[in-house]
Image (cartoon, rainbow, N blue to C red):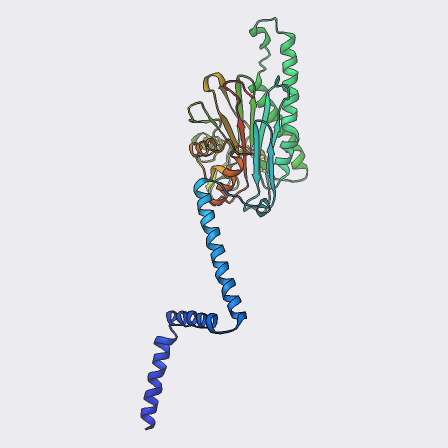
Length: 368
């Protein structure tokens, strides 16, 4: 009799282990209890079950909404979710900038426009690294100094307006040369200031001068500009300065430096770009330089619709062509699509600060 009882208990134990304690069985048991409680038990239990059901509906609705928004490129998210968020909007230029997933906000941007439209408008993007000091310094000094130099240049040209072009330009000054001089001068000032406090911060520098018939873009680092021409084509306004590029590798090697892979190709295993402003320890080794690449564009020929200037956070998730298509479909938005593409880049997984500036061209070859 005892042996039969033990056999029965052993059988029950096996049933408990292999049937009642299986996850599927426990799940069905919980559902059954919940349904029984809903129909036959207290009002409190009914309230809990109803609240849970409503919560599930709400979450499903939010998921559907986010999927639809992602499909159409519109993500309406409170700015407070991105820590530091900056925006700017005027008649033909808008910018939007978020801290995103980074611990610190090191992106900066600036716009200087002439109300009377008699002098070039100036636009700048500065993507800092190693701290905010270099980007702050560039924002505080570069565009204003550049404007003063351009105004002085214009005054001299006006004095000589009756002379032939060769005599006017005999000093070698031009918009591109002034732009290059000011960037290199600012870098020297920045190095002197930051090295005095052992501040190793650096920054990219992307600056565009927009006059009535010409667009001039200077680039140092890996912020990038792209233009949409009259046919909707993406025209590169700059080229990234990356350590793995043949020209940059040769220059770095000639200076006695090296590049190595540490998540990405880096100069001396440290810096993911080969040119920058600041970064005094690498400048002292001559492995990183501040020399800008400068490109000029004829607006009469291109008849552009708009241009995009952005930090590399955007270009981690968008190609030039894709960004142009995205913005072109959203030029009627309050920020000309800048806010939408920043949020879209964030939701595509960009880990960096993201800053995007969109400049619309009014008419063909009007400049601004």
